[in-house]
Length: 109
Image (cartoon, rainbow, N blue to C red; front, side):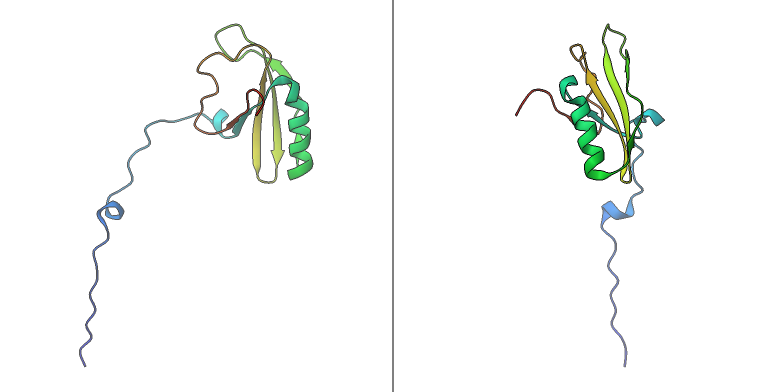
């Protein structure tokens, strides 16, 4: 008894190699960036660790933009990954904070 087996060709999208990424980022972007108002900074990091576990680095205040600005910064190490938490004490310089990933919370909902 002859077997009739037809093999379908893969869709064109699967047959092509993946396109090269259009951008590259440094290791400093290996974390999810979270921007919170400075008055919510400690409450956010404390509640995140209480909810998901982990620990926080020492918090610092620095200037990371070429314009005059001050930003609170802290890492939150969790079993699911690391957050870089930022809280600008000065207005956020445009376009800072528009990274590929992250969560921004400005103002009240």
